[in-house]
Image: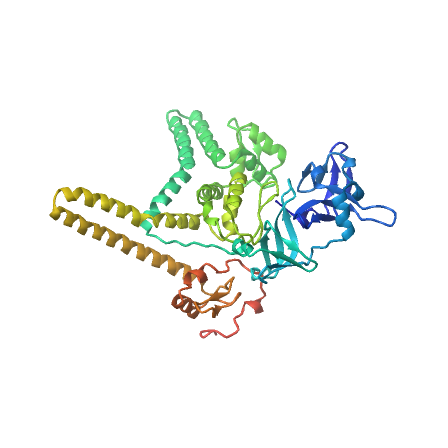
Length: 496
């Protein structure tokens, strides 16, 4: 999807001639059908109609320009009855207040998100309202199937509230079951490394069987193979260009490609690539394998755990490599968003946007799977009891006792791991503000939006049975604050 204001100001280029025709100056929006019809390219005047570009005639919306087949795609608004009527009515959406049919304020409309192919509105960017972010003041209102837009207020159905509420799960099970999923994830993540190590090992093993120059050649080939497996050759070349070489790079016969202290030019990088010395040039420019390897591992883990973002609120927009918006800032992540994220290979970016690292997502996923441990053990116990019944009451009694011990051990491990994880979350929450109002069972406020989480708040939330809600509402971003704003309202007890 695209954001409306991101399109305003873009140049319009004709595909047949390659010339710039005009610029996008506004959006044309059908309030009744909740659809973007096209764009305004020229305001109306006393003697001329406004000129418009229907969305259906656009060839492509790029990051830097809008492409149309030819100049004839832009025409006077009178050529399109519905567009002409909308422009005559001078409908203005900016600033319209969005409310639910029972009177809950969702904020004032600032912008809209639309499907670049169909024009259907996907959602609205609003300022203020019930779900506004504590620091940005913005929220994402998903476009409902029915919307009634009046002069000052746009009404949406009550179901919209459910689509804006964040559903956050926790780690709920014993770590012995969690480790099974983590082990599987780690195995998947390590397959590429093992393959790389095998290639490098085979090269080095072959090299050990020869002497002198052959051994050196095989060693270079092994290093190049390892580097190329982890870092793409084009990325190595791009990284090296413009850097200062730290070591002199020479060919096996002694020819110098670049000297230490020289700036690596594009021609030097191309020569090194042709001579199969690109990996040496990459390392000479300061490149290493640690960060790319870590990024690749994170990407592998994120790919298998991205479902943990489901139901969480995105703290920033997530884009495809071509610039399309997958998830808007403030949007609740849906199944469709996760599917689009997988297609764009942006799983790590989505997890980061909802405040999860690949590791914490893996732990959460493993924790969810671990909730089935009790059911599996119970099923095994029932089968065990059925089999031992044939052997007599004594064996049946012994099996029952053994089953109770198994359940007791599993419950003990589960309790200890859950407590440890909870304490870690508490330590991470202390001193940070909350992103939502925390209420007790009687709807009395424990903490308001933006207030700091302290030990008393933790205990109060625990007593009210709302500790999970509090810990799921911790603001984890780093706001830009002045030194004065960073100071607490009261002087610390141990302050100098």
